[in-house]
Image: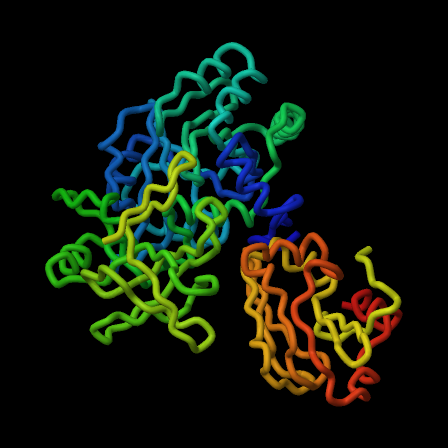
Length: 342
Length: 128
């Protein structure tokens, strides 16, 4: 068990690698109740979120979720989050480690908008992920909830009572994330385990998300890194709305910037965060997240490299240079290797 | 509680040492492999390399982190466990048997006296 932002959380329940394979091959469940849930309501909610977030909530219809960065005035990422667009309001799920900064920033920028910002600390959250996750989960639920689990499109969500069921996740596998009252979460957790779903800890959560090429806040980006530099350019909607951090992003788009790319190790060892990356032209970069990929059987990483990095690079591991290939992430999707050398 | 065989000697850095007529087999303890989690890579010294007690003589990496391995006694490396290149999980599955790391032809038998007994090692991990 480790302390994770004030929550006692397991790195693993048994073997981290077995938990990882369970999610890739069948189904695993993560207790992610530490994630911070915040609701934004009021007649000004839409305008407020269009100002606060670098992605545009107008891009999606009610019943759909959107991934976005929340940026500071320099374009740095204060946090990355999912916003669930409901008929009359919005629900945001932000990181636990940045909870206080996020809430303070959101309050600070609410002036001038008719919004009500409310944390929902009463809700728990379970992520059930894997090729069999939706079938098994639907089999344990009744009526509208079972139907939602089966019928939802990717990034769609549905609500039934206090339950919100979304076809989202952080593993690169199919599955759902369910926000629900704490007492219901314990019952569902026990039912899932009885149905053969593997309890899965923070360790496998990290190797799964890294194989899926998904960023971890604090590793792959922070408030000194812009979305351009964190492979989050696809989340930017640079239309004429005036969101926080927009101008620095436009400047950087014009002037160039470092990039977050994937690496696959060809030499010996394991890639780890903060190892130095040496480019053939003498320029340098740094690994932001690295691990051994249980699915691929080799070491992989995300690394921030100078613009245009391709081909072979060297990584300094314990003072020795080890060759690695620059690739386009993700590394793994739906159980299969999908990365391509660039 | 992790297994701590009574007949072995232990370094405070969690290596075990087994002396057979001056050839010392070295591995990491059940407690150490359990704390590290699933091992995915083992870097071993080279046969012929001469090490002093306390020198870095390898690295074990789990999915979580890398840890240095220190030579518990001085001498020359005379064998390494080549099976670990393909099966690092042997260290998790059998830390005192198939998961051994390397063997040292000991040059100073008195080095063994500086290592912990099973009881002393047990006391150390209980106090950690």
